[in-house]
Length: 132
Image 1 (tube, helix red, strand yellow):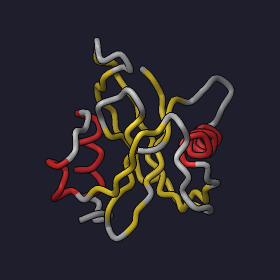
Image 2 (tube, helix red, strand yellow):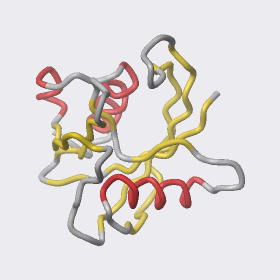
Image 3 (tube, helix red, strand yellow):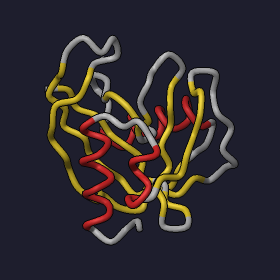
Image 4 (cartoon, helix red, strand yellow):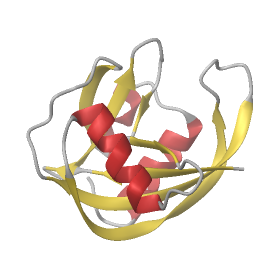
């Protein structure tokens, strides 16, 4: 199982998702937790790398476990994704690895290409009453 942390950035009842260069799908900011790193440290590092922003972690929303595609899209891997509601402390500046960003509402998920884990995550946030 691969452990990851994801930043849930909410604006106007929508959640921020990113599309990395060379990757088809939109995903939440965040990523893999490295050895000797806490979930919070991984989240702070990943958001700084992707969005060039510091964060304030407001609270842990929950954990989602599901299969998701690896980077080369040739197999599904089991992922444990820890979701944290965060506030960005700086203006978003996309890093070179990020191709696009979008604030996505549950009712508009059909407009975006999402992994099965991404769909499950957005449904979870909707059921929690965090997004429309």
